[in-house]
Length: 255
Image (tube, rainbow, N blue to C red; front, side, top):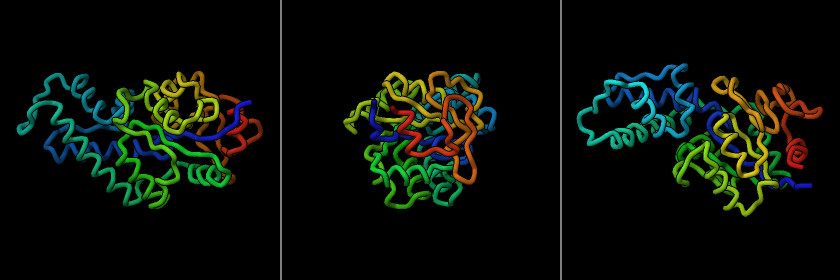
C-alpha cells in the first residue's frame, strides 16, 4: 500500500480562477498598450486554453486566427513581440493579484493548511511563470506561503510544457519522491495528460473552461475541493462518503 507523502498542485484554474479573473484581462490590456486591436473574448480564450503556456498561446493566436497579421512597428520579429506582450501581461496579472481580484478556489487554503499540519509535503507543477505563482500565493496566502512548497516547478524550467510530462517529472525528481507517494491536482485535460505518464494519480477540479473536457483516467473529478459548509459535487470517481476534500481522502486515493 502506497503512503501519501506529497500533494502536487497545478496553479491556473486549480488553485484559483486565474484564467478568467487574471490572465485573460491582463492579455487584453497588454494588447491595448501595444496598439493592437486584438481582444480575447471568454469564448475565444476558452479555445486558446487548449495551448499550454502564455507565450505559446499568443503564437498560436497569430498563426491560427490572424490570416493578415502584420508585425507592428518597432519589433524585429514575432518572437520579440511575443516576449514584449507576455512581459507586459505579467505585470498586469501581478497588479490584479495584489488588488485581490484573483481569489483562491473553494477549499484550497483549507486543504493546504491541513496538509501542512499533518506533515504532507506540498509542491507546484505549472506552466505559468514563477512571477505569476509568487504574485498569486503572496496575495492570497501571505508573504511566507512560497515556503510552504518544497518545489515550485513553473514556466520554462523544463523543455516542454503540458501535456508533456516534463514539469511533473521535474517536481518528482526535485522532491526525491516516487509518483506512488504523491497525488496531483489539475483542472484540464492537458494537465491530466501531463501527470498520467509519470504514474501520478490525479484529482481534477473542473471550471467553466474545462468542465466539458475528457478526464478519462483521473482518480476523481470534482466541481471543486469543497468546504464543510459547501460540499463538492462528484462528477466521476469514488469519493467514498466525503463531502469535501481532506488529507484522509487523499490517502485513500493514493493507496
